[in-house]
Length: 163
Image (cartoon, rainbow, N blue to C red):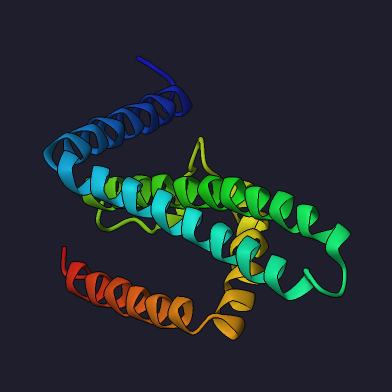
């Protein structure tokens, strides 16, 4: 007979393997949706950085022309950091979804997310939030697109809550 702790570890490993297999099935069944989300995240982060760089550059062109290249450098950092945040958050969401489908009675806090922990992507939030707030304050079109995007995200989250 095997000791209880070995059986518990084997069961946890089997549950983790099952969750990964279900995640693969979920992704392959919804390849078009996942691809659309990735393209949308690329576009949204690129738009956030581009609007920030052009708006900040235009505002600072007359008063501090030497700072304009720095705003574009920060805009590139915003795009790359936003992509890292978005992809890590998206993969974390997929892991949580697969875990909940695997074991609906267990809470998500009891599981260990192996690759994308909160400490990885939560510090990247200011790279998206600060430029997005700046863009929303100084660019009306960006504000309207952001509000529309937030509305669509809330609508999709509400509709997929019953999944």
